[in-house]
Image 1 (tube, rainbow, N blue to C red):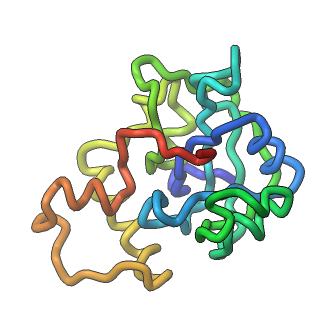
Image 2 (cartoon, rainbow, N blue to C red; image 1 turned 180 degrees about the vertical axis):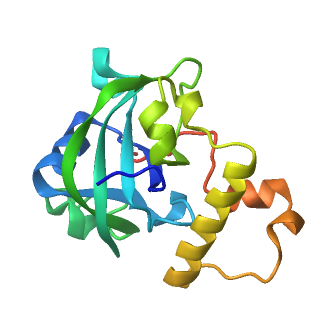
Length: 185
């Protein structure tokens, strides 16, 4: 159950077909080459881009993360065995059932988006995507939680205190990106 301290990865769900895969098959894919540094989170929140038509520009659904594994796109999408990226590595994030948020979280100025870390508390109170951005001392707590998860996954270890990590490195480690990944090309 989503709690205020749950770690949430807000992520782009490229097409309605991908939403159906998440709903029916219980997984979501992230290309390894564009993945955020930490995928071991509690929940995914799905941002719907223009491909969703009148339901675009918002987060309508979340899903609990039940685990993840590394596989290839070809293994995930067997009907696309001839796809140019069929042999590329992807994270397969196993999901619980999709849950509708009480009110869609709309975008106001964000039009291109890939990943954003947030918390259950921010998700409970958000009206817009900007409301999901964790700031101040809470950002330091979010960073510590993500770092602990990464260390538990043995994906990233450092002895540097957070205060010594340059902001651009911290943003990269947290997976904050400005441009939408090309999932379908």
